[in-house]
Length: 150
Image (cartoon, rainbow, N blue to C red; front, side, top):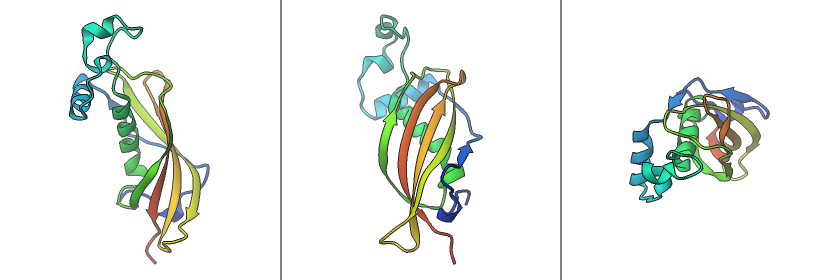
């Protein structure tokens, strides 16, 4: 188990995740087609050449999934009961094939569960950056976490 127990999180703590991931064209095409998204902005190089970006954009939901996935080993692996939801997700800059994503997580809130005495709720702010340091995704998420065994 690599994740932290509920009691191990402190408000204001920032966790820099060591895993980085370069996004490939295959990642983007597979994710976009498996989720049945037909948007040309993700799949059609010819169409994208005429856009302001000049090339396909990586599907933003892939970016979000990658961000949360990168954070799991250092936060919730084996200690989470469930994802409670996302309060806010933003994509301030585009992600392109070949971008390398790094991530950090800030603990925003920690509170004991009112109905589950062995669990608590942690609110995380996950942030993803590209290799140039631009913020490409920010997501606030609540997770139901296990307390450490007595």
